[in-house]
Every structure is written in C-alpha cells, then in structure tokens.
Amino acid sequence: IWPNSIWWEVFKDDFDIGAAVTSRTVDSAADLLRAQYNSITAENEMNPINTQPSEGVFTFEQADKIADFAAKHGKKLRGHTLVWHNQTPDWFFEAPGGGPAGKETLLRRMRDHIHAVAGRYKGRTYCWDVVNEAVADEGEQWLRASKWHDMVGPEFIVRAFEYAHEADPDALLFYNDYNECNPAKRDKIIRLVKWLKEQGAPIHGIGMQGHYNLASPSIAEVREAIEKYAELGLVIHVTELDMSVYAWDDRRTDLLEPTAEMVERQAELYEQLFSLYREYRDVIRSVTFWGAADDYAWLSYFPVRGRRNWPLLFDAQHRPKEAFRRVVRTA
Ligand code: XIL
Image (tube, rainbow, N blue to C red):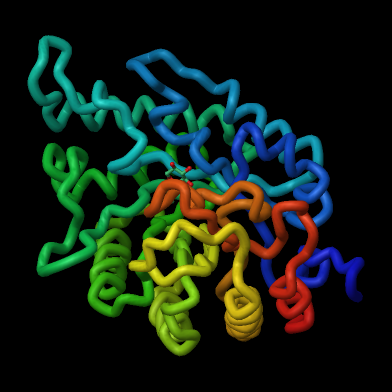
C-alpha cells in the first residue's frame, strides 16, 4: 500500500479523514485534498467575523469557495463555527447608541446570524460546531468569561443549539473544545454537555480538538478522554488534530526543519493515536486535521509568531511523511 495509499479509503470503514482549509489552501493543496481527504472544514472563513462583519452585511465569498470545492469534489463539509468568543465582531455586543447590547438584542442577533449562516449551507454542511470553547480553562470557574456568557448567562449555549436546529434540522450539532486531556477542564466540558441535554438542547456530538504536542498528552491520557466522552452517548469527532513538534512552552524559533528525533517521535505518536482511534471507531466518526500539509499550519504562527512547525502528516511539498506511513499501517 506504500507509497500509493489513499488514506481516507484505508480508513473508510472507520472514520472520515478531514482537513481544515483556507480560501487559499483549497487552491494550493487542491490535489492533495482531492486525493487524501474526504472531509473539509473552513479554518476561519465561516466564523462570524468573516460571514457577518457588520450587522446585516453578509460576506460569503470565501466560505462559498470552500463549500463549492467540497461539493465539486464530493467531500463532506464540517461547519465551523457559529458561536465563539473569538472571531466575532464587536457590533454583536454593542447597542446601536453605544454601551452593551443587552440579552434580548444579543440573542436576536445570535439567532439571525445562525439562521443566515447555517441556513445558507443547509444540505451542504452535514454538521456544525455550534458553540466553540465555552468552558473556562483554569480554576473553579465553570464557563469561560466572555461577552456571550456575561450578557446572556449559560443559557446562550442552549439557545445556540436551538437556533442551529431550527435553521438546519438535519445537521448534526456539536459542542467543540480543547484540552480534553486535562481532567479538570474535561470534567467541566462533560458537565456542560450533560446540562445541555437536561435543558433539552439538540446536541448530537462532541468535538475533541486534539491540539497535541510531542511532550503531551500521553496516549493513556487521550484514551481516558475518549472513554469519558464516549459515556455521554454522543458521536465524537476529532475536529482539529495536529501534533506540534515542540513542547507547549518551547519558545525556540531557530529550526528550519524538524530534527530526526522530532520526525520519529511524531510518527510514533501518530501511529499510537490512530490505533487508539480505531479501537473506538464505533463512536469516533471523523478525524479532521487542522491543516492539509506542513507548508501551511496555524501552529507556525501560534503561540509563537515565526516559529516554524511541522504538525501534519504531509510535508511542505505535500509528500507523505513517515507518520503517514505508520498511520496507514494501523488499518
Ligand atoms: C485558529 C486558526 O487556525 C487560525 O488561522 C486563526 O488565526 C485563529 O484560529 N481552536 C479552534 C480553531 O476552534 O478555530 C482555531 O483556529 C484554533 C483553536
């Protein structure tokens, strides 16, 4: 099967294989996407800042380009994201005459936004990350302090799911978050999902972002996260998988290519990760990488600007890396 394996076909009885794309990488990585992925997600183009930069002014060109690529090439399309504390323009939260918008206005704007965006891509986005990253990272606090939370309260999350369901009753609706391998954060995420179900919110899936690195989490910690999420009785999607070659707190910016040790360790971890995912294939239905290949990865800008990173399974020339060979061999 090497070097000609098409991995989404290799895994087709297990889960979809996806990539986040931008309005540029749908062109620059078109061949790779067509061959090696059967699902795509807009990296930023469907977020509120890009789809409704000012009230009632909808700009869908970039998002349409991505949706058109998916339709043309028969790829599934994951919608990302309707309600988030990031990439949401300030006007949402401001009253026309200045000052805070207030709960009623904010919920009306949320509903209008969700209806416009999820409505436009109805029948094309088979699922949506309805609410992204609403749980607090640290400390005792349950939900993240945000304008959504502070103006509406926890109810904003329930409403978002209701509006998304109204707008596209056939779409699978997800809550998506990161640091799922940190037990304290995960407990808060699980508490949120259980609470949403109690409130009758139409939630169908949970997204584990999967932003990992060579130092953490361990495979045992990922297993524990999957186990705990599986108990919720929802579908699991791995939504934003990548494996930074640096530990989180490594600030070096000097590397022009990954070291041999990094390449090997990354391959080993990806192989173990995919063996694990395959064990849980009844509940994990999609594995999406946060990028198609190492020539463009958001981690080359975050959290350290100008630090080159190589987190994906294809190199900057779109050739399969050692990690790809190992991953394919788990099937
Ligand atoms: C990131 C994008 O990849 C970047 O291009 C952008 O500058 C910031 O957002 N969690 C998410 C994604 O849910 O939407 C984020 O995407 C990465 C973290």
